[in-house]
Image (cartoon, rainbow, N blue to C red; front, side, top):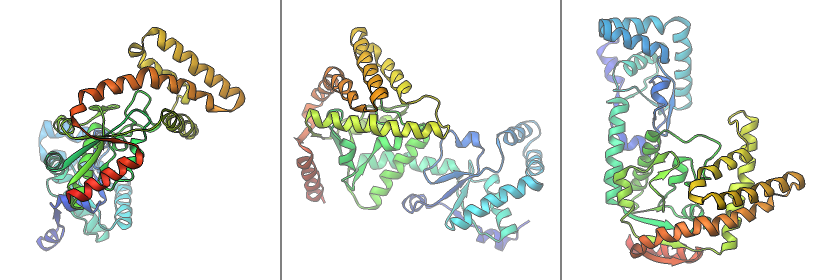
Length: 376
């Protein structure tokens, strides 16, 4: 057992704001099944027990109590198994000297690992007080508090207006689509999977807290529906966004077609090709696009769906034979004119009273920058 003086040095961290602002590396000691439900942006999963071991210990706890469960855990994580996990923890801490460790409640699992690291490697690694649960509760409360405190501005514009590119020009913006790993439309999936809902919420909280630490009183977000793919903006925060002033960026139809063509065709085909080679996905770009069209079939209607599918397949066949993907601009233009533009125009009319400015790209940037300076 560790002496009292050593235990005193093996500190616990409860300054959660500092963890966020400093982007402190974290070791999540929970089992993979727990980590998969969602963790924190700076956390890696280096578990004390794997899923099977955790299940066995949990069963023992229910049947014979805590002492028996702890004894079983020590037997399961011993010998070469313990040594390998210790090496992984040690390697991460050596590469990230400021790292902290945590488990579900900051109790036995993190205390055991903290003690092992000190006893074996003389590493004094702090653990989160209250563990995952306390940090998660802090992030939930802070995200709600800051969303209500900040002056939110919503950036709108028709599909293909380059809203994400505009957000990148602003220091006080949050790219919700980047956090959700989804472009926010039926065609918006990336080759990589979306994060769990909890991880998305934690990432959003990190962004809000970071902007607050930099003394930004305004936050600019894109005009999104509540759902961004399978992730959704927390209801209380979404309600705040729904009351915020709206700034609309306008681009020519030709520019919008070109932006969508580059992002959803040229760049997407490259990404899908690389992901297929790495074995990360099973469907190529063409198959994924077919599936995406089917997802909006009801909203398109049979006649329009059939026509758009035909235009898409003709473009794909032309590309396959000529290696020229530019024919895809045809179905993009049709989809914008007949589906996305009417839908957006209908939605923006419902929030017309909230629109405070409309203009081209440079005009919108000038307005938003001036607006930021004016409110400081």
